[in-house]
Image (cartoon, rainbow, N blue to C red; front, side, top):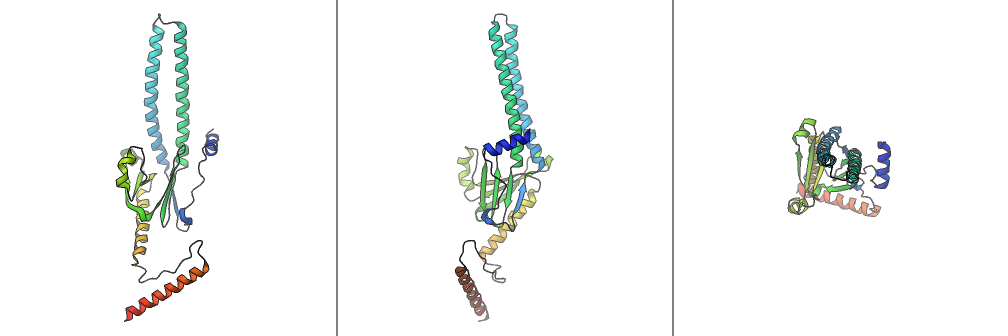
Length: 251
């Protein structure tokens, strides 16, 4: 039954296919998924929410029907109409609960995170799909968040803040989103992911400053779409620059 629902949602909602690393950077790309305990965590929250919803429904609708049934002055067709509407409302709430439960599982299965040498790519959501690509050049802070229930389940969230996050946070908070914050939600290796991002961020910044290139010149690499003539010219310039550096060091 769930497989039919999943295929229908993928077709009707046009859920994107499997992840593809950004910038065609597949050599060192690592793909992460939410841990199975994250699905349990979402289930706990789902059960709490549905318990309150069904409790309110039974108290309100049940109390109304009991009051109408005990009042002999209320016409029979009114009691029957209220009972019918109550049954319809109950069936609607049950159907909505089942749909939200299936969507919850599908959201867990379709959630993934990619870390490459230059950027991050994250996707979450089913009805509303949110997909973000964050370059390391814009990352300002990486932190780990973990609530008490998450701590008990052994999972955590990795929060990645980018440039402009503090300025736009107040306005975007009212809309329920923040385009300057990316989340690795519900992973069971949060410290590993945080360390991986910080390591690749550090390597990228060091390469940009040229600290390592002074002692270990890196070869000129071909970029997709670059003509062979331009590549050869760049290699020649790179060689001349290395020769000038060596001559300057000897003098």
